[in-house]
Length: 133
Image (cartoon, rainbow, N blue to C red; front, top):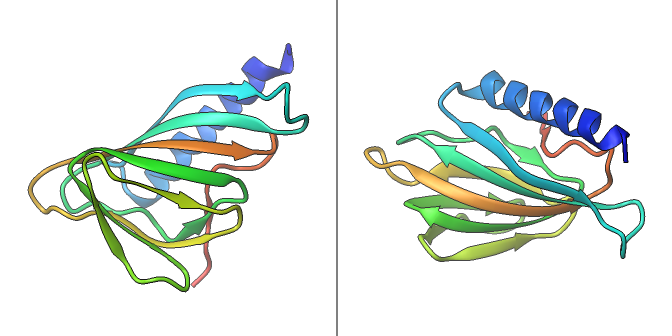
């Protein structure tokens, strides 16, 4: 358990670095991170993602399972093999482990959007893996 604070610090740094790499206005905040006693070798994370008007994430994938809930605004999301879907405040979606997230962006050019993301992944897995073109 002593390694958990170091892991959290490293993760927070990598998340903020990843966010800054593609747009300084995207804010990613780790709200909670916990090793799972009932699922050895896995951790759960609760993350908040804030999108400024018109802002989007780079195409990416998650090795872990992700569930997203729109807290504010509208977000367009597209997973490889599916059509883009616009989710409004109060709506949610699920992404199986390994899904390629081709589009994740604020649907509005004038209002912010905010997501709550819950993930289950291995302790050493990165939250976001950029896709190559």
